[in-house]
Image (cartoon, rainbow, N blue to C red; front, side, top):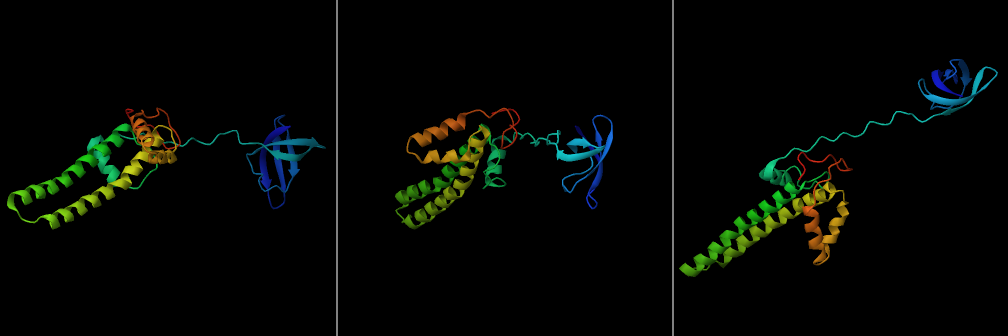
Length: 206
C-alpha cells in the first residue's frame, strides 16, 4: 500500500502514516530520511505499517531560468568582449557579437598600425632616422594584438556554445587550413533557438 507520512519523530522512531485507503497506521522506523509529507510504500500487518520505502518525489525540480540576452549593438558587443566578458568563455555569443568583435579588432589594429606607415613616409621625406620610433610603435601594436587574443578566444568559445557545440572544438582551429575553415563555418551558423546548457537564445536570433 502507499500513503503519506503525517508525522514522524526521529528521536523515538515512531510516526503516523495516512494510507491511500483513507486509514491511518502507526509505524516505527530508524530511517533518518523519513519526514512528514513524504510519500511511502508500506505493508500493513496487525494494523501497523511495516517496511516503509520512500517513493521518489513526483514534483520535478524547477527548470533553470535563463533570461534572454539583449541586443547590445555592434559597439556594445565589442565593449562587452573587452571588459566584462574579457576572459569569460561561459554563456553564448550570437553571430552579431562574434563579428562585432572581429570587425573592431581589425579596425583597432589597423588604426594602431597606421602611425608606422607615417613614420616610414616621414623618414623617406625628411631623411631623418625613424627606425627607433618605428620599432617602439611596432612593439605597441604587438601588445595591443596580444591583448585582443584572450577576448577573441573567449568570444569564440561562446560562439561554439551558442550553436550547441563544445568549446573544446576550438582546438580544431589549430589544424592548418581545415581548422580555419571550420571556425569560419561555425561563426556563420545561426543561434540555437532553444535554451541549451549554456543559456537562453539571444533576442532576435542572429
